[in-house]
View 1 (tube, rainbow, N blue to C red):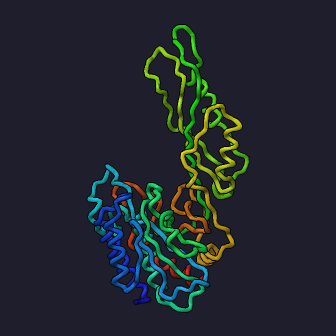
View 2: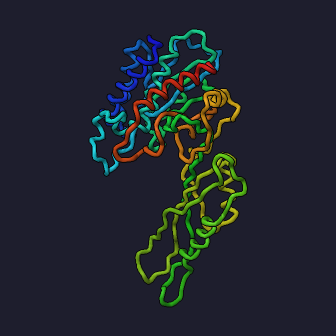
View 3: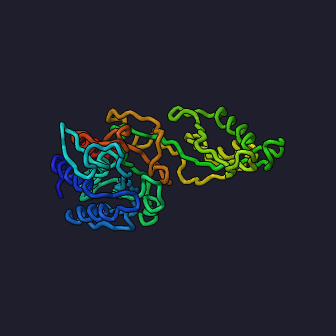
Amino acid sequence: MTNDITILQNQAIELLKELIATPSFSKEEEQTASIIGKFLALKNIAATRVGNNVFALNKHFVESKPTLLLNSHHDTVKPNPQYTKDPFSPFVEEGKLYGLGSNDAGGCLVSLIATFLYFYEQSNLKYNVIFAATAEEEISGAGGIEYTLPYLPKINCALVGEPTLMQMAVAERGLLVIDCISHGKAGHAARNEGENAISKAIKDIEWFNNYQFQNISKLLGSNKMSVTVIETENKAHNVVPAVCKFVVDVRVNELYSFEEVLEEIKKNVQCDIIPRSTRLRSTSIPLDHPLVNAGIQLDRNYYGSPTTSDKALMPFPSLKMGPGDSARSHSADEYIYIEEIKEGIDLYIQLLNKIV
């Protein structure tokens, strides 16, 4: 096993090219899981596969030590229809490595693999180090990190690889999707009969559009509620609808639990409230956590991320940080700079050297 960072950087870039060339849409990550498992096996690292997730423990794992998880995902979204390049043909042009998943989150994934390799054989670590390449992140699926965690030893904290320009996302908004149902009474529109469910829905929608939650986060700002879908089952123009359904997308800062948000909503609207899921909760890591302190020592800035990731499914402190730029994620002709990967590996190693 080599600790030569330049060699690790080159190996990581070649691995990323192989992953880009292999389609790995969410729930269809079988081949990339095999590639990652084979890569580790060639390094004489025993990896475990559960579903389409692959994980490995450092060579000198000691149960009594705290454990740091290095995690990123190997699934991708489907190619943006505006692609002008083959999304599965990795190539480098003007220092950019093009290909689907190169930025989100292939660069992070291979950088964390290289970092894991760097520390794998070290016997005097203060922390155990586990690497996990997980599936279904792009759809927040149950077959990814959530499925993997029960197979892992106790985790004390995690470094989650997502493109953040190697700055520290210390907090992340939660996502709460609510189905709302307003009830009226059917009637004939011409005879002024019934009770219009749309009119009732509009009153509640106005509340969702205008209400401001009291607690405003320094990192994430205020909670945001957006009505994104509205419909009735009635297709006749002359019938007053008895039911109107609409959907609310709620982005929650780290100062509120989902239960608190739902309770506040129920106190102020007349419609029925049905949360689809409460899995993707807001998260934050203390600013005095060793991972954050290490980043600050490396002149990394911290911020609150408006997007959700697998960090939301981790019941322990986690820091989101990685090479690449979130603004490029899911874009046509996705790319990551080769130098971003090299810098990411170097900074990851420096970060861990300060705590492990």
